[in-house]
Amino acid sequence: MRTHRTVYGDPWHNTPDFNEQLYVALKQSPWWMVSIAIHVLVFVVAGFLYQQEAQAEIEKQVVIETSDLRSDETLEEPPEPLQPPVSDMPIEEPPIKDVEVSDHVEEDNDLPSDDTLGDDGMSDAPFKGPANNNLIGWGGAAGGAYGRGEGGNQDLTTGGSQITERAVEDALKWLAAHQSPGGQWEAATFHRWCNGKPAAGGPDGAGKAHYDVGVTGLALCAFLGAGYTNRGQHPFAKVVSKGLRYLKNVQDAEGCFGARATQHYIYNHATASLAMVEAYGMTGSPLFRGSAQKALDFIALARNPYFAWRYGVRPGDNDSSVSGWMMMALKSAKLVIEDAVRRGKPVPLVIDEEAFDGILAWVDKMTDPDTGRVGYIQRGGMPARPQEMLDRFPGDRSESMTGVGVLARVFAGQNPKASEVIRKGAALCAALPPTWNPDDGSIDMYYWYYATLAMFQVGGKPWATWNARLKTDIVDHQRQDTTYCLYKGSWDPIGPWGPDGGRVYSTALMAMCLEVYYRYPVFVGTSR
Image 1 (cartoon, one colour):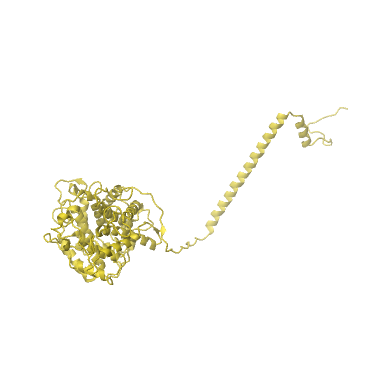
Image 2: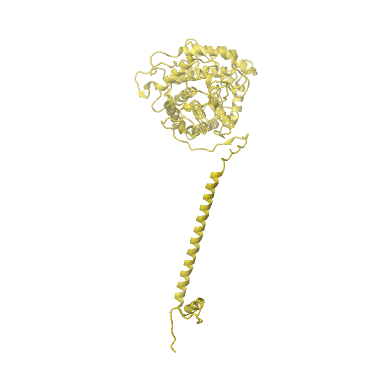
C-alpha cells in the first residue's frame, strides 16, 4: 500500500521534535557552516539585548523628568536659604585676569560688581544725612559705602560752600582741557593740548617731564575726589577712563608705575597707586583690581623692614615725605578691604599689614616730643627743599611733615582729642595757615594739602580757622582770566615744588584740598 505524504504530515505519526531535527541537521552539516551559524546567532542576540537595555534607560529618564516637572507645578516657592554667619576671618577673593581699559565709558549694565549702583556709578543710597561711611577717599557723608556724590552734588555741611565747589569744577575743566591724547598729563608740555587737539601759545608753568606719571595720578585723584569715575554720563567719564588706561599701560611687571629713570620715581608710583586704588574702590571694577593689587605689591616690595620708604626698593633709609604718599595708598586699600569684610564680601585686595606699624614707628622717631614737629629725615627737623629753592622758600615757613605725622596718627586710630602729640602738631599747623604771598616764601601747596587733611580730622577751632584761610588764600587766587585752554581754573605753580610738578601739579593739589569736605570721613574722636 502506498503511503500518502502531505506537507502537514500525519498528526498521529510520532515525528522528531525541533531539537532532534536541529541535532540531525548540525550533525550532517560541514564544520565551517556550523561555525558561521553560531557566530551569526551570537551577534543577533547581543544586538537584541543592547537595544532592549537602551530603550529601558530612555523610558526611565522620561519618567523621571516628567515626574520632576509635575512635582514643580505643585510645590510652593522654596523658602530663602539660610545665610551662614559672617566669619571674622576674611574671605579671599579668587585672583582675576587683568583686563584692558578701553575708551568705552562704563555703564552700570556693564558692571560685574554685585553691588547695586545708582546713576554715574555712585551709590544709590540717600546722600544727605549722618555720616555712615568710613572709607577714605569716598566722603564723610551718607550714601552707602562710597558716600560721595557726583561733582556739584556734594554734602558741604562740613565747611564747604558753592564757592569752593565752583572752584573744584573750574579746576577739573582746566585739567580736562590739558589732558594729552594718550591719556596722561604732561608736566612739562601740557600747554601743547587743548581738549585733545594740538594747541599753540598755551599757558606757562611747565614742570619736569619725568613727573608725568605722578601728576597724572594727582589729576585723576582730583576727578575721583569730586565723585567722577569712568562711569556714567558726566562730562569727565572719558577723561578718567583714558587716564586710568594710561597708568595701566605704564605699569611694569613688578607693579611699579612708570620708568625708574630717576631716584624720585617712587613719588610717581605712590600717587599713581592712590589713583588706581581709589578707582577700584569707587567702582569695584575688575578693570582696575589687578592693577591696584600689583601697585600694592610693589609698595610692599619697596618698604624697608620695620620702617617705611624712601627712594627705590628697600634702600635702607627712610623719609617722611615718600612714606606719607605710600600711607595714603595703603590706607585707601585698607578701608576698601574693611568695607568688604563688613559686608560679608570676599577680600578684594591684599596689603602689607605690617606697613602701618612701620609708618607709625617712623613718625614717632621723627617727632620732637617737646614741640610736636615731625622732621623729614631728622627728628623735629625742617621739610625738604630743592637746593635752588632754599632761600626763596625757607623750611621754617612750612610744617608739611608735621601734617603728615598728624594724619598718620589719626589713621592709626589715635584720638585727636586725647593725644598730646597730635594737639602739639595741630597747633604748629594752625600757626602757619595758608597764606598766598609770593614774596615771603609762605606758599607751599604740598604742606597745605597734608595739613588740610590733618586739620579736618582734628576739627574744632583749629579746623575752622584753617578752613577760613582755604576760602581766601586758595580759592581767591585761582585763575579766572582767559579760558580753560589757557589759565582759567588753574593755580600758578608757585612754591618749592612748582618747578618740578608745574601747573598740572598745583591745580590738581589745590582741587584736592577743596574736596576735603566730602572726600574723607572723620575717623575718630571728632564731631562736626
